[in-house]
Image (tube, rainbow, N blue to C red):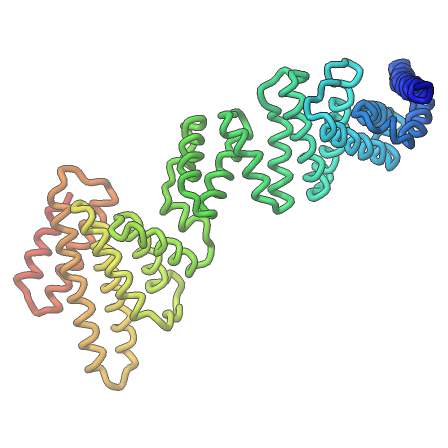
Amino acid sequence: MKKYFLFSVAVTCSLFVQAQDYESIKNLLVLIKFKPAKEKLDLAMQNAQFTARPEAYILKATLYSWMASQAETKGTAAGDALLSEADIAFTKFRTMDPSLVLLSDPVYQKGPINIYSELYTSGYTDYQNKNWAQGLQKFKKVVEYSDLLISKKFFAMPIDTNALILAGIISENAASPIDAAKYYGRLADAKITGEGFESVYRFLVSYYFTKKDLTSFEKYKALGKAVYPQSSYFTFDRIDFAIGLETDWAKKVAAVDELLATDPNNEKANQVLGEIIYDTLVPRTPNAVPPANAVQLEKKMIAAFNKSAAANSNNALSFIYIGNYYVQRSITIKEAMANAPDKNALTQQYNTAFENARVPYEKAVAIFATKSTLSDTDKKQYKNIVAYLSEIYLNKKDEAGAKKWSDFYETIK
């Protein structure tokens, strides 16, 4: 019994000494006597009984973070080391006591606040110096600390806008789009708006389109349109993004093909596909060499334009493109005829190309004729088509048809 009593007294005394240690170090901290506080704390941290309680780590986090923030250490290697130790200690404290009950103590509250502040300052310096990878690691922690401080109501704000926008920008530049989407997504979900924040929504729209997450794409496009109604960016549809985000011709075609795989009769997608191919088959640069698969591309283009026209009875543009393609082809053949020893085959090709333009042009004219008003562009196209039809009928040796279209040309005002 006597031995048991002595053991109990020893344990009680030991616990009392530890409690005194915590309090004495804390008092030195409050009195801004950092050096002796650190000496005493570092010695105590070698004692397993001292470090068995979470208070050891919140005490270390608070003391070290204060020391890292002092003018003589701030921004120095020594200060960075202290800040790192403070962060590690606070993480340990959170692990040992998830309830974080000790943060009800105003002295200990300064621990996470100091760490947040110093990480923010250091990370912002990295942002200014374009040290993206290093800055990202710091701002990941900044956001974690700000979330904690907001949840504990130490920060009176619903969301740390500054931390999140910087974390997003640094993530983008650090080539970490997944992180950028995470931070920007929180800003967009909170409908943060104002100068400079439109890029947040633009990034998310583009990011989720490239990830083929069309649900999120539509979500952030709608959010962007809601908070920036004057921006045309959020009126663009999937087709616009499919071709706008690609610079390589083959990838543009593949992107539209992918959309058409799920919606084969989409008017705009077929129109765009036809136009992309048209620009390759009818290049604007002189002496351009046609692609090796021009025959296959021509078939694909014509099919796309016809599908687009079929989806909208008022779509004259698709027929105009088909007609223009065959006219341009006839011009190319005619130029080749000038130096050809045998013109018979080329003459037949020329006549065929010119004739192939007739039907789509006549369909386009029929559509224009149903419209009560025409834009200046429509009127110009209308007259060009009728003029070509007159030439086509002359080439067919159909003088009556040629005169019909020639007379009709004069009626278009």
